[in-house]
Image 1: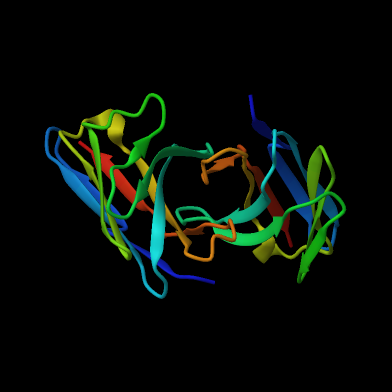
Image 2: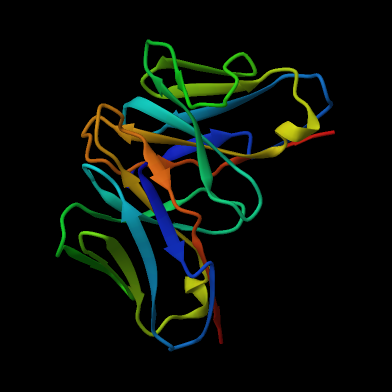
Length: 111
Length: 116
């Protein structure tokens, strides 16, 4: 069964303390690995899409990488405004176009 | 990115009543829209996929007669929670994929439903 697992469930960092969030997946026929940011009471905000192992994408303090088994979201010198829940999702194979989400990592960056 | 608007952002209703939530794609045509449900501190659970002009496809365990989905145009999908009960209280979020079919979904701001 296709599935995605995120770790850790929660992460507390000091401002400027870099770290990485993990998204492990077992998906047959992966057609995209997606990262989203979700603030409390809001809908998810799209960050990145990765399609193949070795691919990397960056946006400000965030960088997403992809291997054949997992994806990492690296946060460099985070700021308090980076505090949010970060969700990864996959688009599986077959006829369906739906995205299946992981349980997310709740990131808190303290000043 | 593309803009998806959801309305209302929050609604409180009495048990037994029906509630309609609208999802609009504002600057693109959405051939496919997805409805998700999210409980506190949990991830998004896909409820159903709606395609413009055809019946919605519901995920296993989702009651299609309770959660009516209509995708009447390329910019509007609606979710109606019929005969709502307290256990239907949740955060409902819609999303849309544009015609480019690049994979990413754009989400609305969500609708908080509270059933008394």
